[in-house]
Length: 157
Image (cartoon, rainbow, N blue to C red):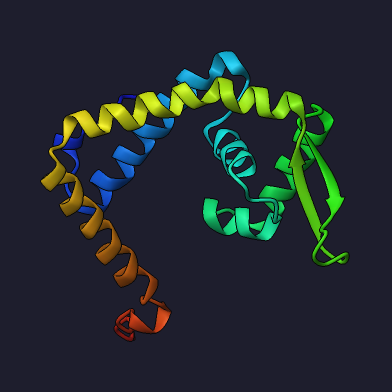
């Protein structure tokens, strides 16, 4: 499949999707030697930076429960995490990275930093603040959309 460049994309939405795919593809290439996907790397990051609640991690990553459950199962099989009863609420599960999980997270950090640093170097502080402000505004606007906002199709005879 031919790669579409951002300059060839017609709409802003298309440009955003293409850039998102480029970031994901770059992350995947960088993480491939570690046998991690970008989502798995994000998951490890959250686990090793104090998040133990599966539902909170799912929200932070923007994934649904079934995708996160699959990832949790894969990480357990690889010996990277353990499930334990939450100390504050025994009906909840806490996810705890093992030593191997913490080591893999440490190994994956430079890959994420490289992408973050590349983006930071490409934009001035003012451009970065403007971009983040634009992301926030777009996110709020899109979150407010639903099917009732769609115009009704013309009736055909």
